Image (cartoon, rainbow, N blue to C red; front, side, top):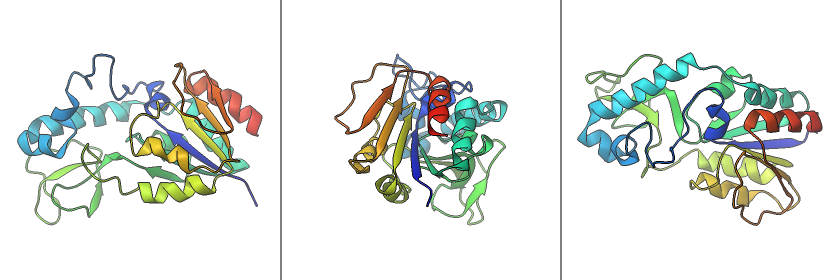
Length: 226
C-alpha cells in the first residue's frame, strides 16, 4: 500500500506564480480592507465593489501559470497517495497536474447563488450585477468569506489524521480553522514546513522546518521523497 501524503498549502505557493499574497504588510488586501471585500456584510452593503474586486482577481488568475512547486507536488503522485488541502482559491494545483484537491476557501473560477449553496457554476468571466443563478438570485463568487462556515474542513480532517507524511507550504499557520489542521496529524507522521520566513512555530512533533521559498523547498523535498 502506498504511503499517504497530505499537503496543506497557503498563499506562499501561489505568490511565485504572480498572485498577490493574502495580506500585505500594511494590513490591506490589494488596497482594500478585508472587511470591505471579503465578508457577507460587505456583499450586502456594496455588491458592486465586491464583485469588481473578485472580477479583477479572476482576470489576474487567468494570466498566471503554475510554478515548479505545483508541478513538484503532482510528481509525488507517482509514488504516493497525495491529497492537497489548499487555502488558496486559485486553480494552479489543478493546472500543475495534481488530481486530488480539497479547496477549503472556495474557488475563484466558480460562482453560486448569493442565497443558496447550490448549484455551483464554472465561472471564467466577470460576474455582473443582474447575473442570476437558475433559482433567480444574484450570483456571487464561490468563496468562503470571513464569518462563513468552512464546510470542506470536515473532509480535510480525516486526510490529515491518516497521512504518513504532512507537508505544509507557504502558510503562516495563523488563519483558523485551517491552521488547526496540523494538530490532527499523528505523532509519528513525518512533517515538513516550507516557508522563506522565520516562523514562530507551534510545538509539533517530528517537524522539519525548510527555510526556503515554495519552489526551492519543493525541489529539495521531492528529490528526497522520490
